[in-house]
Image (tube, rainbow, N blue to C red):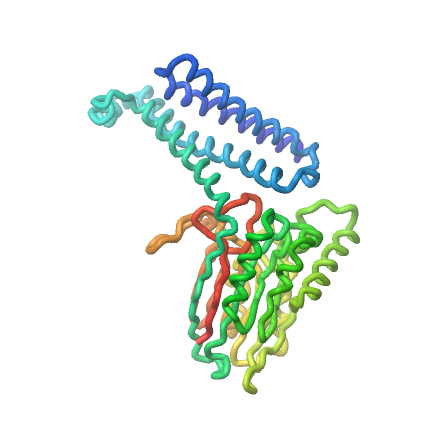
Length: 415
């Protein structure tokens, strides 16, 4: 009942935003011809109705029965329309607050700031703010649509990490780090294959995958098992589980069915030649020298994410090794447990955030909305002698695209 109430409350909110933004639409087209205005009004309310109807019917339709491509893009477009209107509404609120203050006694002040620049151009501040809001909101929607083309645009990031305590034999070791494949979101097998070829082209000594192979169900890997089985490395391919691998976000007939799905996923990784580390460690040997590779199940410091991981179990027996690498899906684990309690874990590899698949990365600028949730969300972080690398994700989830934050394959060289 509570979920039903919240769903309809959200729909009412969307309708209110639609009506609010429509006032700005009317304002900016007021000087247009009747036919143009009519066409714009019809288009606006057609899209609005499509969003509202989709959300209203969501609890009653089985999205799993929709063709994957239609489901993926339609839901993304619906969300994009909502976000662009919400973004537009922010500018309209600012203008309404301005007018409310003016009406409440600040008339002389607002006459001053509203003066020459706008009036000399023959446009009121209200019309300007409406144009600005609609332009930026439309720009956001257009950017999200453009981002559809980037979801398979894999970027190879090469980094060298220096550790004074790294055994001599492992200096120059090359590792591929990938994360968040999310095979349930893929719709283009040939594009995915290009990423696999890029990985194999690096001829790394070791391949490490830090979780979220699927969205919910092991069956999502059916068409991609053959591709990811090609991943081979002299020292092996190792993996861990992410929060999505447990099926926590899907509906199951009972606990037994959910557990069976997890067991299938474990078996599947074994069949691909991957060594799944479940709160355990393995010893990597090279020229009679050794380092420890630890892998734990998902462990998130945020309240919404599960804690199946047991680092204490994986750590036991590794005390004697001079160098340790930890695979842990969620980067919030680093500050919450790894650094405070396990100061001799040299390098932690994570994923999970996807960099929100939206942001800006250029020289001097690194920003994404996800930074307000995760302190460490993409790339390299260092504290004392410990390092954390957060992979931006191989796949995508929810939004079938990427803006500014491209899918990543990381080549790490230890020096």
